[in-house]
Amino acid sequence: MENKKRCKWVDLKSSLYKKYHDEDWGVPVHDDRLLFEMLTLEIAQAGLSWITILKKRKCYKDSFDDFDVAAIAIYQQDKIDKLLGNKGIVRNKRKIESTIKNANVFIEIQKEFNSFDSFIWAFVEGKVIRDNFSNASELPTKTVLSQKISDELKKRGMIFVGPTIVYAFMEAIGMVNDHEVDCFRYNEIENINLDRK
Image 1 (cartoon, rainbow, N blue to C red):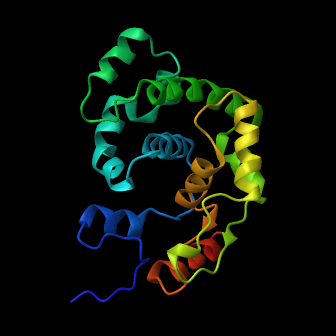
Image 2 (image 1 turned 90 degrees about the horizontal axis):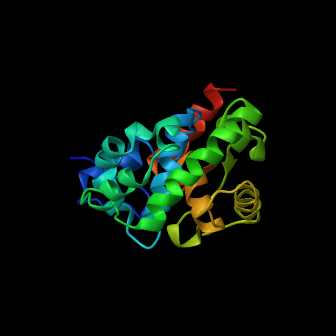
C-alpha cells in the first residue's frame, strides 16, 4: 500500500498525474528542448486543466517535431492547417501560431545568450527559489519575478507569456520549488539542488 504524501493538488486517481508530479514537476530543467516544450505546454494549458494537456503531451511531441525550435520556426500555413485539424492537441489557432512565433524568439535568445537555459536561469542567478507552503491554496499564481520575466519575454516578441503562465512555467521547470513542505518530493527536490552545487 503506497503511503507517500503528495501535494494536495495531485489527482490521486490519475496515474499520469501522479507520475508527472512524482518525476517531473519542480525538477530543475536545463535542456533547451525541454524548456521550450514546457513553455509551449503551459501556454496550451491556459484556460484548461493540466490533466488535459498531460493526456495530449505525446501527441504534441509527435505533432511539433519533438519541440525542435528550428523546425517549428519555419512552419508555414499548410502545417498550421494540419495542426488545426489534429484532435490530439488543443486546436486553438492563436496558441498554435504563438508556438511558431515563440520558437523564432527562442532562437534569437539562444543566439544572444548561447542557450535559452542561460537566459532564463539568470533571473534567479542559477539558484532555485525555495518556498515553504503547506497547502496549495497558499501558492501564488504570479509574482514580481514572473511579471519581470513576462515583460522581458514580451519585449523580445513572445506572445501568450503573461505572468501567470510564466509562474506556472517557473514551477514546472524547477526555478521555484513549490511542492508543499510535507510532500515527499519537497526534500527530494532540495537534495537534487544540493547535489548540483
